[in-house]
Image (tube, rainbow, N blue to C red):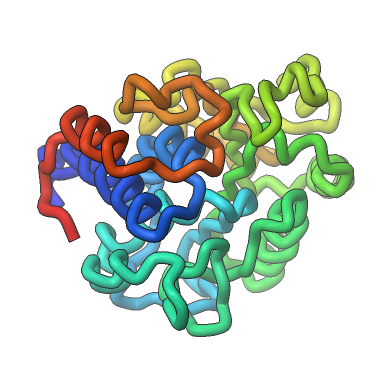
Length: 281
């Protein structure tokens, strides 16, 4: 894709998201809409990986692991738009027999998906195994993960954070979707995370803040900065400040859209705010 096409991608991916979730009246649009710029920046500007040479063991390339596995709409749309599988397959989202299940699955061999995820708190532990495997194999490529901020209420996350810092796993970049929203309310209301940057730093991580997490250029530059800080003895945590439901005025910043599908009228309202830039599936 040209740079101009990449700049058009966020609107198109958002169209994919709302249409996929509406089509089966199930799925998780809120966090998906909020992380579109992250997925676009990572897969089209940062990640050293070629979909045509996809292999599940990720030898000789960067690897991305989605820990908050419920945001599959944005994940699948990005993979399809990047060329991992045919865009037309997005129409099978969450349907019986589809490879595009509600949470990622490795059962049917969907290109781009390396772990089943969605049981929150587990993805960082898996990533540590992959990252240390790369070091043992003298593979200089990086491991990227994405986590919800509500997911950090899981104890397993902090065991992994402790391990990564203590063992200096410095080929790992873990991004936190820091939107302060989860299924039952704001993160601060449900179980506050406190000073998240100070906590990661106390566990011997380097922290990069991306304040404009819904600005494609800002996210790209932030991830480039994070990449430049690898191989220096510390894992990297990226605090990505986003808004749930970003791009659609009646969804933006509202935790109630965590896992609620749009009805027919809401879909039409959403699509009027999202131009078809690269062609619908």
